[in-house]
Image 1 (cartoon, rainbow, N blue to C red):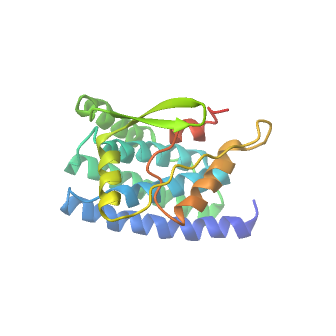
Image 2 (cartoon, rainbow, N blue to C red; image 1 turned 90 degrees about the vertical axis):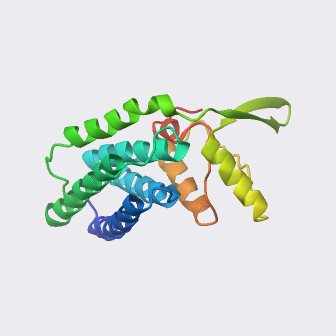
Length: 213
């Protein structure tokens, strides 16, 4: 593996993990705190790890991202237990970075327990999932019905009150292009330099798994 890219990964991962720890500790003190920034940090970490081929790092950060996304969507509430699981997961990600910095590999640490903890939190709280509200979006000749959850609608309302712009962006990749998910990640990175991504269609997970045309 190219040491230049590896060093960049280690440096940026340490930076994001430090930010995550700070934000999660604040989240533990203030449960009304917005988790968007925390979600973006985790999303970026996952994307970088996936690009570098660190499978365990990617798997764990993906599960932690799912937990944060459940908080964002309103399907689960912030609790000390939720924050503890997130902090524990971030500590393990830090261990992976340290192992990578020392040996160039992420090591053999067992992540099954922390992943199971995160999954149980999501499963046990699914009953509180916010009801979806529906908007119709016109696209040329077709009408496509999209669903926005309560959290997303609040973001739209707040942006409207502040006279901020809301854009719908359509990105088209050639059907035969390679590394579709990696290209989508680069699109996300570029967009996030200018604003916040509220919703994706398909969902982020499907884009990452290349479950789109």
